[in-house]
Length: 614
Image 1 (tube, one colour):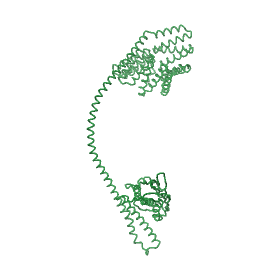
Image 2 (tube, rainbow, N blue to C red; image 1 turned 180 degrees about the vertical axis):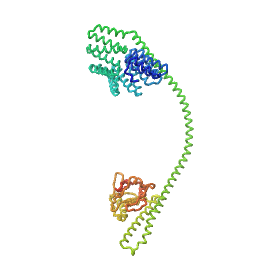
Image 3 (cartoon, helix red, strand yellow; image 1 turned 90 degrees about the vertical axis):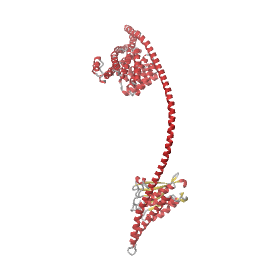
Image 4 (cartoon, helix red, strand yellow; image 1 turned 60 degrees about the vertical axis):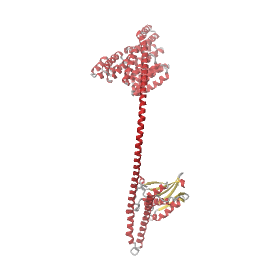
């Protein structure tokens, strides 16, 4: 449809419309050309709008009927027939409001606002243009939003509210520049010219009027061309440049006659009369003044004004009556809803009471069921843990204890000084001693752990002791085991740190952490015991430069279900119970164990003791 916009002759447009066979499509085409020609050829535009109205009414094309009524209202407004424009605007507004056709309802507001503007009722015009803006903003119709902003700025200017006019025109100009719409920009430039002319800046005003003409010619908007040209003529006349003014005014007059715009034509005749007089062309001035008087003071215009005022009053009265009727309906509806609400409230109370009683019964049943389920779940978890404990004990007894005992049983008969040389005898003796020592620690841990699982952690008799001295007990006990791998254990715990707790519990944890470090530290390695004091805690750490662990391995420590054991650096075997014991004894004393480790760089196990017991 847009591709035909460049041809405005009746024959070419009729040819396009007559090719269309669909009724609704034909009505849409007629409306399109009526809208397109509204500010170019009002006679032809009226013809197409009337055809669109006839077809849409007969075929019940509600959307196209609303558009046709709007087009007729706008065309009548352009011609200066304000009474007819207001009548069609009122019909369009009622129809589009009833049909819920928001785009055309917004257009009805715009047309009615324009009529009020022409009657210098700028307050009402601004009110309706703002409704137009609100609707088109909701519809995301950017072109119509830009147009509404232009119209609001123009009305504020006409009402001499210059600050508001400047504000809205700047918004409109920025908005339309982003849209890059020549028609809307032409309108914004004309408004800007009006503001500059009002402030006595005639050169700037004429510059913007010229920009208006340039943009209006691009979109063939005769209405914007003629209004910009007569404004330049008026402006030049104010500076007594009558000859130049007459050129612009005569061009504007020709466009006004071509368009059939009576209001603008009348105004131009008046301006031409003054310009001719100023230029000494008194005869031309007389003729122009005569034509102005004939148009302006005609009986048609007088009747139109009185009839328009009557129609406006009728419209406002109908609107108020409609509002009163609506209020009555709303009041009746509220009373009806009130009665229904009372009945519903009573029903709701009765239903709620029944529901609450049912809930209480169900709750009591569910409570018994929940308690039973929780007990079963607890017993299941305890059974699973017991079975896991059993499996762990059997694993230790069948593998970790049976293997070294079997090895001892096989080797001991061979330990004969008469059949072995001295060096072999001592070497075998050292290895057997190491196995027995490891077996001792395994048995010791097994007994400690089994007792704690069956009877709980015993002791917990608090005594005050020096942390360094207490750790030295474990260091000395394990020194011989460490020397077999030439591992150096260094105790660097601060000798001035005291702590109150069960010292045996502290020994068990330290001993197992050192045993673990010895197991995973290579020959000639180093194990260090350190201390660190913070505001609220004491950290006792056991660090080694052994094989280290991945983060995944660290996450699996201290838990019976996920715990694991790996051979030491000399293939030492173990139960993996040492760290589980550490975790249990630490928890019994409200201590924490923190692990930092990295593969190939060793590990650091820290016991975090609350300082309040220091």
